[in-house]
Amino acid sequence: MVLAHLIERTGDLTAWARDGAAVGLTLAAILDQTPQQVVATYYRTPPPVPPDQLEALIAENDRRGKKGLKPLCPPWLKKLLVERTRDARGTG
Amino acid sequence: MTNADLMTTEVPVTLPDGTVLRVQKLSVIGEQKLTQEIGRRLHASYGPGGYFANAKSSLEFLAKAGMHAAYQQAVSELTRLTASKTLPGFDAIDEFRTTPDGLAAELYLRTRQTHPELAEPVIRSQLNDLTAWQVCTAMLEAFAEDHKRRSDGAGAPD
Image (cartoon, rainbow over all chains, first blue to last red; front, side, top):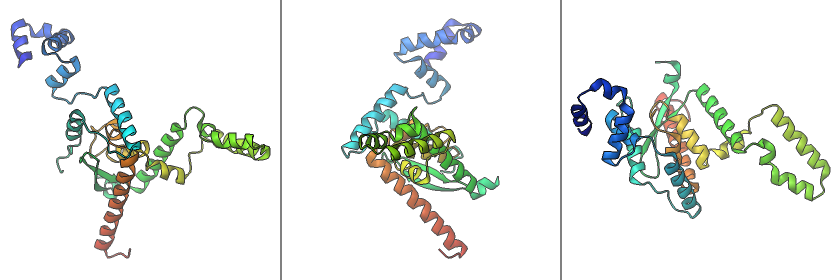
């Protein structure tokens, strides 16, 4: 919605398409999101997991395992698991 | 549908967070390739030193104990394994499959058709020393149950 509004305001779709990265960065600043999140929202694709975030979780969960504790599953990971384990064939 | 598809079966395997993966038991060739890939990953996990790095503590023990003949024999065997690019043995691979890294690789490879967007590190994040063994056991039991169900259905003896 915000993106559509911005395009409307700029009024030059060709210029926008040429300079999509700049718009993405601007939107990221306006929405207080990362450019990746903006792109993910616009293209409706799940955002990639920041590797350092995932690596930190793996390290933390390995530490928990040594103490006999189950791994943590923060909401962002749960969301990712739900999104990416949907059966692509629609049978599950 | 390919012959490999006909030979493939699926079983549900639940991750610790409750996510259910549709895990495939592959065709005979698929299973062979999967074992090879896991063996390759196990070898890679030894680090740049390969078999020598993996046997470091044993080599140090032999050296400190003055068992020079055994040391020479061990080095010779490790050199042969390295030069011939031999994969780790079946027992070592089987053990690796119960570790978080090994099981994450196996689950990843077994879900390429059912969950193509699922990344290996995401699976790995839900496996640790406690849960990898549990999930691995659950997967093997599910495969065994599936095999038994198919055998019963076909009227074949167990």
